Length: 105
Image (cartoon, rainbow, N blue to C red; front, side, top):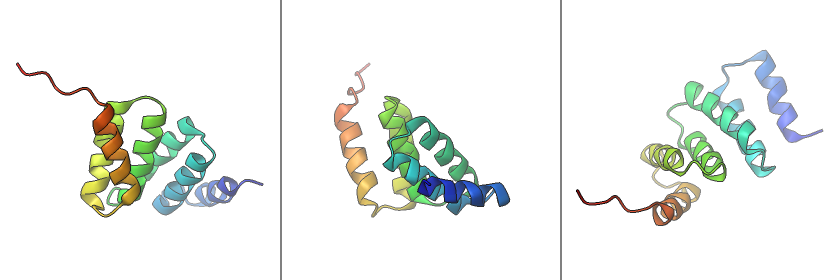
């Protein structure tokens, strides 16, 4: 019995429960199910858009799926909502280091 199953059961009863989507996305991140984590986090951003953590989970999944530009946008959104989120700050620093610098025109 996975911990994510508990949140899936909640979501069957209450599919718009943003907090359950947030928790499910974190469970999926901890078990490295990145595609599912991305899906759950995206649902979380629909129902819980003012919560930085769900944007951070989305950014983490996108980073692991090698979609760096999308991850950067998501982590920046998360940090606008929760500037103190250490995990998102760390991810932002790593993404900015990994991203190629924009070329001068």
